Length: 292
Image (tube, rainbow, N blue to C red; front, side):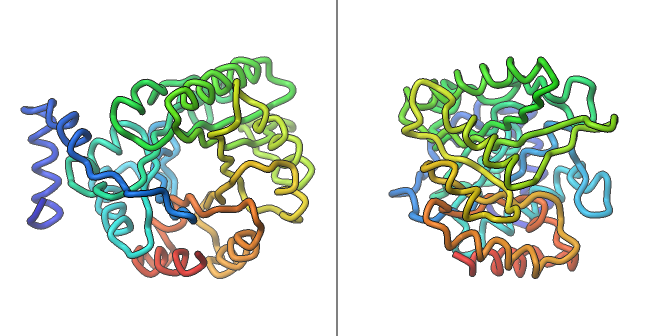
């Protein structure tokens, strides 16, 4: 697709209104990567579907879809970027923009635990299903697993994630599980517990989900004592980016150290690279790619 980005975006909007079948056509015609890369650099953009639009100091940064897509296209065009993780709406926008040829594409599956909601831990599967991921020719699915030992809704989320892991494995597709031990201790919003002990516990739980772990990967944050944390599982893992850091250099240093561990196979980063403090998406992406 040629022209300015504004023209390309206008084309997507027109196509969605007048030719919805073009989405399936674009998925069918997408050129898939010849072979999975040994180290993954994935750009993530599945936060909006959970109502989490903040990046840095801007509470609605990801609420402008055109701005988000333009930044994603810029990131995906950088050398060394292997693919994308997103919900169906974002993936389909990128397909219509012609941005996913030769890229690894992972579909985000459970976005029902809306940010800040009373039912946040009941993270229902409202996005891709294993069958839909396979039918669209995607390369795998990602699910968020927040374990709150005091919230009964955790059991439903655990069961749903286990079914998704099994379903993806039946299609021979990657199941990427993003586990956290979470709490509402002290009242208020759900908070992820980012201690080594919490991550060791929840990674052990996530590793055992489903009828097989043969196709399961973990998506984990960088915390203290990563050597001990990553020893909790033999499954391959990628590092997540999380919130836009106040000190990007410190974040890069943390990723670099963790990437030296044998089971860590790459990065899956969204807001940190798409909305860097200096607004230079290309430079932020290139710095992250350089770690690989």
